Image: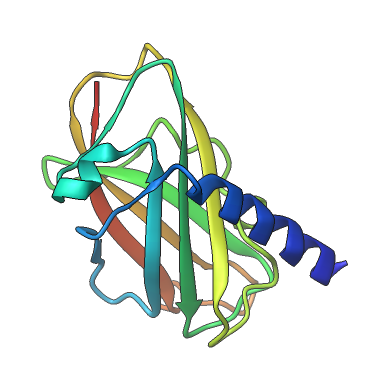
Length: 159
């Protein structure tokens, strides 16, 4: 079953990257314990000029990336937030915190994995610029609040 899920997520990632642009101006959060690379956003032609992705209202958006965690988790939790005025606020795109919906589970330490996040930009989203933070971490009963996490951020603009 794990091989099937791995194959399906890999194919979805490959399909979503076909028309996407690679975002290179992302940055890792402090105290992160993973490597993130090959970040693609569709649509994001602005990435060709290292500008913030302009996400149009009433459009579907895909965010795909590869990561290599330095920790493992059977029950990872994910959060997408926006940094606004020095605060980390849940972003309105964040529909479900179960990370297994976006990546293969379990998350395996020191193993490259794929992440695919699709969402619809509602016309109700405020048209403004955001620093988006993607973060996931282990939520198993033996995990501690200071356990490793994977976190990175990049700029978007809802237009």
